[in-house]
Image 1 (cartoon, rainbow, N blue to C red):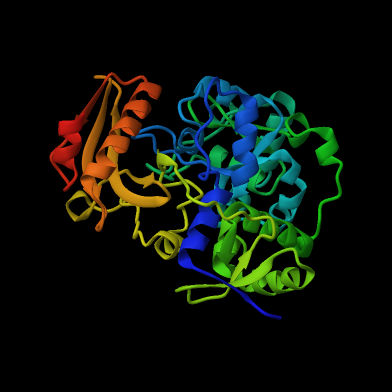
Image 2: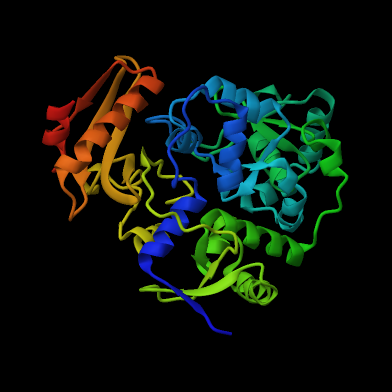
Length: 395
């Protein structure tokens, strides 16, 4: 079989097109049809609790749609029956028609340390929690009759939380997010449509096939590692599945200039002529969540520094790359100061080889659009970074 060869530029444009960055943002009112369209492109939306700027799952929608009504989005995600939450790429919102596909993961879940201890030390407790959800759900941890005490800060969950998380991971309950971002747990048959629950779930092998083809569609192009990572699949297991899919024509094997490993292209992937998107990207956006891929596709080395001590951070705490005309050209460390209604640009750095006179005007416009969307009245740019002075002057 003759392997098609692609340039780095072609691979980059394919990746951008697949993720919805090859066309301008829509004009006019944003509604549920637009939300569905984004999910059709990206397949799932990663959730994360950090809200120093805004909850991360709101940002990919903003990047692709521009300002939209987050309350309307919340209503759709929580009550439409079109999405469910599960461990996709980390905790994720996923279209509900993929619920049967993830049943294999639910079935393979094994109790982790804290759950094993709970099973040993409090026999029957988890089943009692399940009974409470069945009788009185949906419930939060605080609604349990005996949630117990937290074992410490951060991940020192109370026994009730450990029980609910185990029931969630193993598929015996499902969950959606409250207005405060906490999970509300309920039985699947009260959240997931009956027609979906009645579907026979595919076995592990067939689920891998489906999810890898999905990953190829959403990435456009990717290596085995890229495509397996999209839904956190086991890479050694994914490799022969992709080889079989290539023989069948479900994916197309390609070589990409400068890539060390073979890649696979989705057969319907387009190669946009010249992407023109201008947007800020959440650290958890599916375009850039795989840091090795970002470096390979965009020549952009990106690491999130939330857990790095302040004195050792290179670029800042919550840094968003800036995408301009298909390239990652700058990065800004952003924070919402909600009390004073200010968007704080705590650092602004230009990528080597770029001109601030080209980057600053669209970046400033994007920051202004974001501030307005977040209900912030003023943008304040600190001195840190080689782009800060030009950006502050322009604003």
